[in-house]
Length: 231
Image (cartoon, rainbow, N blue to C red; front, side):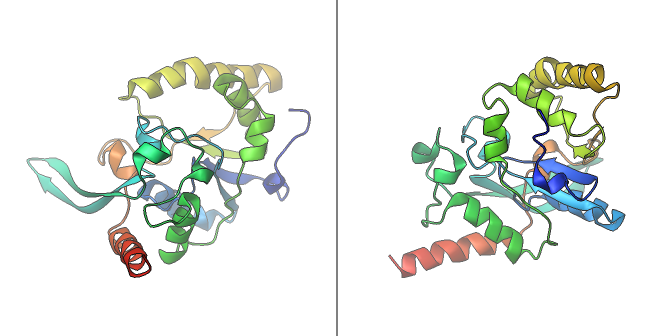
């Protein structure tokens, strides 16, 4: 890494979340709510050059937004009720970098998610684009990239993340990338990276944490309505 530490680490330890696009889903909202009283800098990064792959559940939820209308309880279990909002043309978007994707009403996809943050009145946090840093640190090679990324979280901050071990792709990621990268960091520095889970896994589903509050329905409908007015 040779001292290539992102600028947002400059003011002391940070509380860090890395996402494809910064967006106010329940996961990110919970992250901000839980740690905002700690008095440390909150950073949620995005990678504008990352590629949209519709088969990836997390990436798909950025373009087909699951809005959680309500959660009911029956027979001792929780039942989540969703309304899905498709905001991009998947045929045009698949395989493109996020920065080159537009919504169906013509707004840049990243700009749309940034606007969601502001319209939902989310507390101000730092949301840098890490695309250039990823380019310099093994884009396309997850293991080598994670060795570099997790090295930042021995002393510089806390890395927040959840891994869905019911998903075979994430199980493979943990086995082939996360664990070897953590071992590498510990061998290099004598300590493992500090990684903390964001949310519990005993009640709400993993899908719930990728979903959005009901207010997003009105924001998307208004965006689509304005598009028709100006068509």
